[in-house]
Amino acid sequence: MNQMDLQIGRRDGDVLTPLLETPFHPRLEALDLNNDWSVWSGFKAPATLSDEELEYFAIRSTAALFDISPMTKYRIEGPDAEAFCNRLTLRDVRRLGVGRVQYTAWCDDQGHVLDDGTLFRLGPRLFRLCSQERHLPWLIDSAEGYDVTIADESIEIAGLALQGPTSWVVLRDAGFEGVEILKPFQLADFPHEGGSVTISRTGFTGDLGYELFCHRDQALGLWDRLWEAGSRNRLRAIGYNALNHARIEAGFIVANADFVTSETALRSDRLRLPDEIGLDWMVDLEKPNFNGRRAIVKAREKKTLKHILVGLEVEGNVSGPLSLIYHRKRKEAGIVTASAWSPILKKNIAIASLARPYGEKVVDDLWVEIYALRELQYQKMMKRVKIVPRPFLKLDRRGANPPGLT
Image (cartoon, rainbow, N blue to C red; front, side):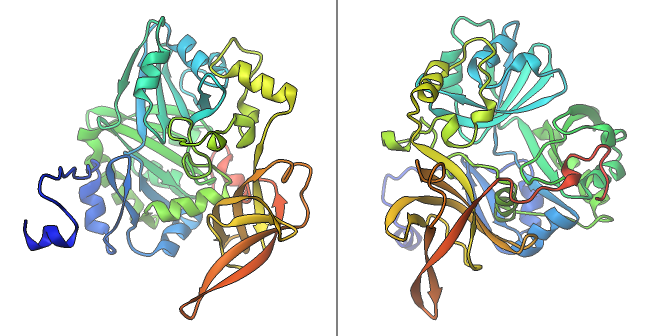
């Protein structure tokens, strides 16, 4: 064993599993000034590349480019693909036309949320399901009796998120003619290097934005095509920290951050029904049976829902991630799952999971316990919170058709 192994705690016989690199890694590595990498589904992903504030403001002021290749991507294809997806997810897939995208979620048989994600309808019998966590065994088991094939194409398909008010200009200048006619949650294929790139008007920032998918062999060419056009439009590559800041402002939730997926929960009190994490609007009881339907209906009828996910405005300007929420400064009521200072709103905002009746019937006299580092000592602060609707920030340009600079 050498000195380096001793320093990082390796032992003889340890199996080293290196992080995978996405198809865009060579470009990201060249731009990386901080060497600040995180782990995303086994891939090496940047937390920040240069300056987190500048990366955030690129999302809100110009255009930002983010590597979403580590996102799990499943190809679902076959004569029963629509029926299978309709049985699997909460929303009615029969209403999802070809060339459209649906934000959705899926549950286990007890109605607990397995994950949320996006469902792309690429053809009459072809779908792509994108999610935070991996679900291939669950999908294959659930497909019993359906004439479908399910394949994990997470490594094969590279992805980029292009977000911000000038994102459509970058695409136009990069030669993607007609991209401006895409409406929110619409997709289309565009020529690229003898093949095609799928561009959807979707994103995770609450801003005008697009997501682009291509084969990994075409990835660097796609990056260079966008980067050259973006140099005239102040395009900036960003890491996850800036994206996370924007998604909090947009009120979006993240699996195993704002809720624990049912496959990873170690305790039963960590499980969540859709209604307990703000996804009740997805549940379509008019469509045929779907996974978890009976349990969801029963919880509603018997009023046994135990939790609620809410938006908060917090006093002051110190965010408190994973801070406890109290009623009247004494009774524990819940926990902050995500928080940030919003430069646009000039407010301290947070997403929190509360135990009912807090957040439902009891909405006043709620406080958050924050520990802030002051001159090398942690200071406890009790700050008043107010429950407010999500999203915290709503931008007209996100839904503008055609897109513009509003």
